[in-house]
Amino acid sequence: MQTFTVAVLGGGIGGLASSYYLCKNPQVTKVILLESSSRFGGWLQSTRRADGTVFEHGPRGIRSLGAVGRNTLNMVEDLGLEPELLSVNSRHVASRNRFLYIHGQLHSLPKGISGLLRTNPPFSRPLLWNVVNELLVKKSDKDDESVHSFFSRRLGAELADVAVDCLCRGVFAGDSKRLSIRSCLPMLYNAEQRRGSVILGMLLGSDPGPVVSSGPLAQRSIKEWWSQWSLRRGMESLAETICEFLQQSGRVELHTDAAVQHISPSASGWTIQLEDGVVSADHIISALPAKALSSVLPSSCEPLIRELQEINFVTVAVVNLEYEGCVLPLMGFGHLIPSWEDPAVMGIIYDSVTFPEHNRPDGLTTRLTVMMGGAWFQDEFGSPETVTEERLLARAAEAVRIHLQVNTAPCWSRVVLQKDCIPQYYLGHHRRVESMCSFIKDNNLSLSLVGASFNGVSINDVIFSGRTAVDELLGTT
Ligand SMILES: Cc1cc2nc3c(=O)[nH]c(=O)nc-3n(C[C@H](O)[C@H](O)[C@H](O)COP(=O)(O)OP(=O)(O)OC[C@H]3O[C@@H](n4cnc5c(N)ncnc54)[C@H](O)[C@@H]3O)c2cc1C
Ligand SMILES: C=Cc1c2[nH]c(c1C)Cc1[nH]c(c(CCC(=O)O)c1C)Cc1[nH]c(c(C)c1CCC(=O)O)Cc1[nH]c(c(C)c1C=C)C2
Image (tube, rainbow, N blue to C red; front, side, top):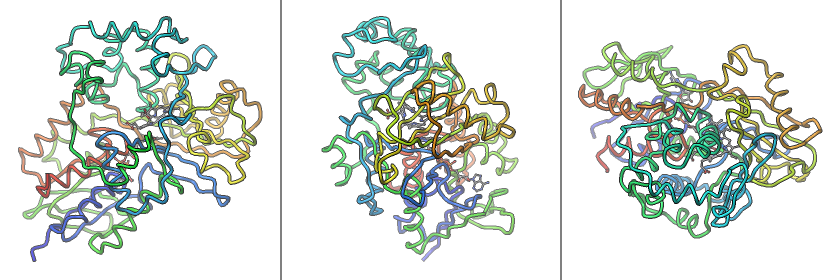
């Protein structure tokens, strides 16, 4: 039998998912997974304390809705993780209540029809007014636009300055005035292009999206109205379970402490230079962050290198705090703070409410996570290299004290500085991705691009990018 070896670069969730899909296909005889750090999982990082309490330092919830959400659930089911799943129903208080902290006060985001009809501070009039007007706004013929400008034009400046500023911080840790609507919120961009209106697009559908079948678990998630889910032992256990599956398959070589230093095309594929050796492969799936890939490509790939280097990343300080007692004055997912209120502190997640199963088993403490920095990190805290954990912890605890009137000190805390962790899709990102794909195709490079740097930052998007790369490589689409 002819051998076909695929090297997967980077062992974050993108590299793990790619290896999983490769393993599912008998055409691939060997997979070599190369990860520079001493562990797999990338940003999926969970602390499991000896008493059973779980704290997340990266992602903490995965959406179940949509084709990419179903796709992840199909994989989770296949991995045998269903008994470990913690689901959150869309009627749960964590799904219904999200808050904004504005002018020193917490405001609930409007919900349901009544939320549209009433004036909900901090908004100055009922949102129905914005919705009705949106139907009358002419379609733009711009190729791309900032998220802020898109919302401002279609739904009004107030909504853009308040809610959309917050949304971009709460997903991309980024600045709505720099992020691209086309790449960050493609469904809304397509709704305007196809239906002439975001509201009509949402009501009538505007993008059929990828076709993904629903396995029994995905069907259960629909029947039970899940909005998001996590795992009993934390998000990192998703990475650990994929690793176990790959090890058991007998077809994957898993290497940690294996930093890729250089890759060069060879007669039959690629030569991959590591610190202590060389690996050959017929095809490379890169699940490296854009900048890391740019630094290992050969100079013959100069146009690709340049495009990859243009993709920026932001740093987030994740501060996990635990307080004695039930200290929250209100229940919900958490609150976001607009950049003009406080650029440094982006949001606070009420972890205890969403996933109480991760609380200390006696249930007598409250877990919160404060997310700080993002696009404002350098201006607010200086260089990530020099900022101290003490300063970040003090800033986070102060935000909890002021926003939530928690006047006690945390009984447990952990500060994790996630350097360059979220890619920023600035204006024109879609053209950059198209140009990179064209370069690869025109030069017959046996290379696929996977991961958060390109087509979506959520876990679902990244896993789906791994599946798409494997389908395209093996012609299974
Ligand atoms: C704080 C935070 C909160 C988040 N919250 C959510 C959430 O609630 N829900 C959600 O869906 N998503 C969330 N995300 C987004 C999501 O977690 C990430 O987008 C996703 O994990 C990225 O996966 P990846 O595999 O593309 O990249 P990474 O995880 O960055 O993986 C890349 C891997 O490549 C390795 N590497 C780098 N250079 C080399 C080299 N030269 N050789 C070999 N290996 C190398 C790295 O060590 C890393 O392990 C969050 C992200 C962060 C940072
Ligand atoms: C304050 C900073 C951040 C918070 N979460 C993240 C950051 C940077 C990262 C993040 N959160 C979500 C995703 C995945 C997006 C997806 O498409 O699935 C990522 C990368 C989920 C999410 N969190 C919020 C929203 C609106 C979303 C999108 C999906 C959904 O509607 O569930 C809001 C939110 N994020 C944070 C807080 C405190 C908060 C709202 C109260 C923290």
